[in-house]
Length: 196
Image (cartoon, rainbow, N blue to C red; front, side, top):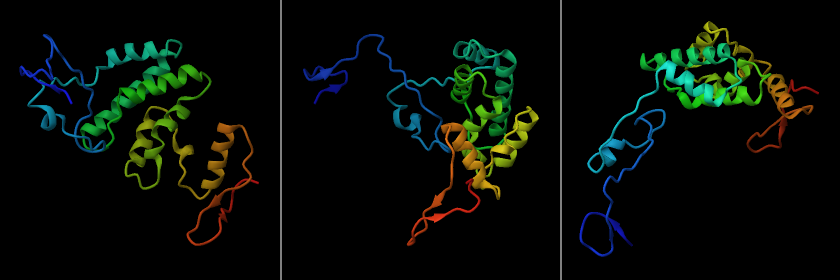
């Protein structure tokens, strides 16, 4: 096994002048629960933290991923995620929605130009729209203030089976005739209310 260090050992790999390593790492702590980069590597590497880009820089970046996405649509998503990030800083939300989510939304709109912003947001916020997520109501209110309606995509209502059937049918282009739920110690049990 070879080592990377500055000794005269023949088995050692010496780093060249100007050697740099670029590491992309999330902030330590919830929700990513990753390692604290500084604690793990701070004594070996000089770390430089690069924060999120400002709104203008982010808009330029998004344009490169979605050149045909209208400026108004991109601006709605940009301002929504900007407000959600402010909610994280204020301690109201836990998940720090990043440029990564914005890029995915713009790529979706670029590839599926007839999809609504509501549909794009549903895909990104699906986890937080679950009952008991703790952030569902705030996310719904914030989205609504940007004229984005996510309520119809909630799967925590009495007609959950019908809603799920509609989503599956739309995604797969096929008719859903029923759902089954695995019940411990019993055969699969049909869920009432599925389309038929």
